[in-house]
Image 1 (cartoon, one colour):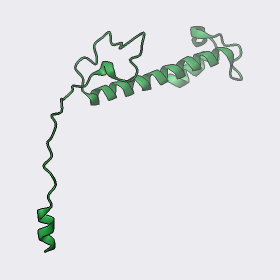
Image 2 (cartoon, rainbow, N blue to C red; image 1 turned 30 degrees about the vertical axis):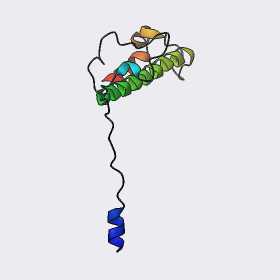
Image 3 (cartoon, rainbow, N blue to C red; image 1 turned 180 degrees about the vertical axis):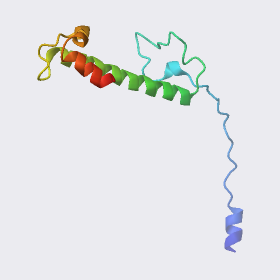
Length: 109
């Protein structure tokens, strides 16, 4: 008897709506802001999928962080000198004077 009740009460047939398949559009992602808009002069994201886009965005963030740490390092070196390196000139002149040249050899060879 219980089976007959459940069999008699069927849910109404659902009609499925057509869903438009949208291709991935990099220009609509977060980061494309006014007044600059979407910036991709070399066309790297022209025909990329969402997975490729996420990989490119991750690489951009990593390289940006490395560049920020490099610029911070350059700034700190010009202000603060390690003990024993007070007389070493800043910039490329450091590689030709002692103890800067010795440190250069130790680090790279």
